[in-house]
Image 1 (cartoon, rainbow, N blue to C red):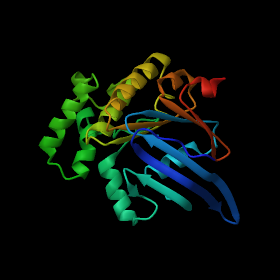
Image 2 (image 1 turned 90 degrees about the horizontal axis):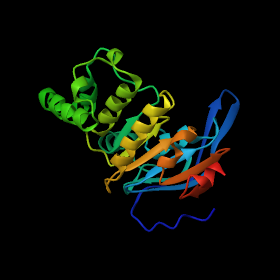
Image 3 (image 1 turned 60 degrees about the vertical axis):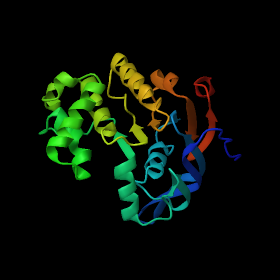
Image 4 (image 1 turned 90 degrees about the vertical axis):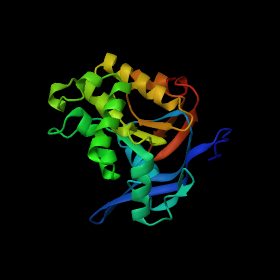
Length: 241
């Protein structure tokens, strides 16, 4: 595969990455020599059929999973070569996560949920909640800061999840099927918000999705099949045609 020609600063660079999973005597090859890069300040989609390796690739490029071979550089850090405690520290500081099922703690208020990443970093509770409340205001639901998740709509819960992902100001945000649990209107609102987030030149948003309703929000789309990146396009039509 020919490597991408990148004119802008690269946030993540993946070269020759392979990954297998074993179950007893059986081994399944999930990623096959993947070459992939993400630019700063862009929304990058990774799309393809279920089981093609999208989520595995997402996990490797943000450091929650280690590749069997190949190189992963994130913000200049060689995640493939440093000890796991350093990867964990890098991830807690530099990566925000947004999930399909929101993953909010049911016993905490919206503001308390958003404050969790700050508390993990040792920020005092009062300051963490204050910053969390400001972040909820920035995603348009400041009036819900004292509500628990079961009192929020799906779209509101996802906004809380976005606020939680952004509260520690990470330069990388990764999203695993962020709209599949939402109706069309809510999904478009969430993607518009994520697109605005990426316009900060220091932040990259990476979205794994098989929801064609939202492909138009991508700056670039990487199409996967059978553990490989088939092509990367600047336009949604690269995938949809």
